[in-house]
Every structure is written in structure tokens, then in C-alpha cells.
Length: 404
Image (tube, rainbow, N blue to C red):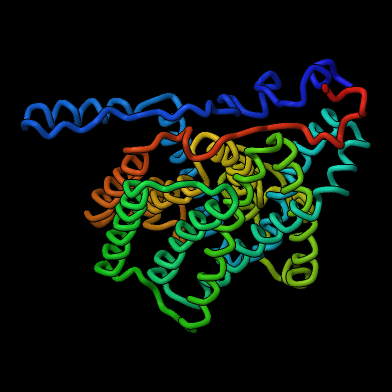
């Protein structure tokens, strides 16, 4: 057993992986500067002081990290759109490669830290919890992709925002998180920015056609519910267990779930999917030689898997720094980042590089969403969203290694 583990059960950032930010936040309450209403000058001065007090290292990491994750989601969605444009629709297989990438990176490190016997104990004692987390996450993604095939874009965008209140509710059930009215206002402002995006798509006629609206809306509502619950559940886990344990288990069980689904639902579709160098490379140029079917199968998912791997790796850090609810709010800006790829929305099937002239409402919509993210922490601080007590499970260590 490593000496670092013998000294204490509590994970620190000595590993460089558990959390680059302090995993255990102080319990002291941080008080924002008061707003003074004595005079216009004092009001402006106090307002500026309050705004400056927001920009702590935790808040800066939260807002920048949220936008980085939003951009990662945009990248994965654009790649998916490009594959769909080529009639390459295998969502379970796509998700399978993403979970495999997380599994092969984080699980070996968990075994290195816990030992094979300790890792086996985690599976036997807590594996069922991680299985439910992975199952909910995988089914949420699967149902969301299915919903886009039945209902229109506007319904999907609006119903997907249901994940935010579900995440707030689940976080309260798990951790009894107390919400200030300014946080509720921040959520409302961010959703208002989403509504501006919906209006812009409605005005420009990009809402699409709904073949079976009722079924599609129901699928998206269930998917958003699963997203909210799974994100809050993962936050609950990473605030109490090492990051590599949680993400490694998520990858392992997600690989099992999506692997079975891909075999049952898509094994006959793999042979029917178009295989060419464009599809295999997707963003990379692989035309230097003729590729085998196995190589094409692997290379098709490199860009998508890279983006999703980054999301799985960084999202738990945002859960510790801010909250899972804040992550869901941050993802509302992903529609705006789609403009970088010439794609008006992450769910639009548009080729990379295609010229697109965005409607003017996209830009104020982005500003409104970002102002909602700032308003969310106008009164409370990220540290007050929940205390992190990250520990290696006591049953992993021999009795002689546990401090009294």
C-alpha cells in the first residue's frame, strides 16, 4: 500500500488527478458585499463591489470550465450531425466507444491506487450504484437521439431545459442544497436566453418537421429527466469519492450497457452503414491508403470520442467547483458555439464548413445566458453549493492501514 494512502484516507490533490482545485471546501460562509441604496452613487459603487466579489478563483474556473464543456458538447454534436448527413446513424455504437475510452484510462489508475482486490471490493460493494448511474446516463443519450427523429428542433431545445429543474430537485434530495432566490432568477434568465434561440430558429424557419410530435416530446422529456438525475447523482458521488473511481466505474458499466445495446439493436445496421474515407476520418484526412473495415470502424469515432472523453473527465471537476445544475445551465450556450462550425444548432444536420448567416438574436441570446450564469452566484458562492469530503472507501484498505 502506498505511503500516501497509509497516512490518511482523505484524497488530496497530490495525485494531480483527483482535483486540481481544492476538493474540500471550507465550511465558513462567504458573505458578498451589501448593496447600498442610500444614493445613486453609493448604489453604483456597491453594485460594482458586489460584481468584483464574484470573480474568485472558484467562480472563474466554474464559468470558464462550463463554457469549455459546452464547446466539447458542441464538437461531439457537430460530428454526430456530419455522420448522420452521411446516413451513418449508430448511436449505441457511438456511445460505446466513448465509454471504452473512459474505462481504459481511469480504471487502470483506480486499480493502481486501490490494488486489484480493492477495486474488486468497489465493484462488489458499490458497483450497483455506479451501474444505475451509467444506465441512466446511457439511456438519456439514447432517448435524446431518438427524440430528434420524431419531433421538431424547437420542442427538443425547450424540453431539454427540463434537465435543469430536475437537477436542482435531485441535488436538494441528495445534499439538501439550499437555493437563494437569485439562483432561481439566474436559472430563469438562462432559460430566457434559450427562448431567444428558439424564437430565432422559429423566425428563420429552422424548426424542422415533426413526424410524431407526441412520441418525440415524450422521449425528450424522459431523456432530460434522466440527464438531470444522472448529473446530480454523479455530483453526489464525486463529492465523496475520488474522481478516478467514479469516472472509471462510469466508463466500465457504460461500456457494458452500451455494448449490449449496440449488439442487440445495431449489429445488423453496421454492415449497412456507408463506409468511406470521409466517414472514417470525419474531420481527419485518412485518404493516404485504403483502410480495412476494422480501421474504418475505429477511426469513425476519433473526433467524437475525443470530445466526449474530455467532457467525462472535466465535468466532475465542475461538479466540485460549482454544481451539476450550473453545468446544465452552462450547456445552454452550446447552440451559439455551433456557429463556429457553420452550424446554427448542435442538432442541425449541417456539414462542416457550410456557410451560415446567423440570425441576429443568436448574439443577445448568448449574452442573456451568460448573464444568467453570473446571476446564479450573485448572492451565494460556489463553495456554498456543497461540501466535498473526498475519501478512499474504508473497506478498500487493510485494517492496519486505517488511522484511528
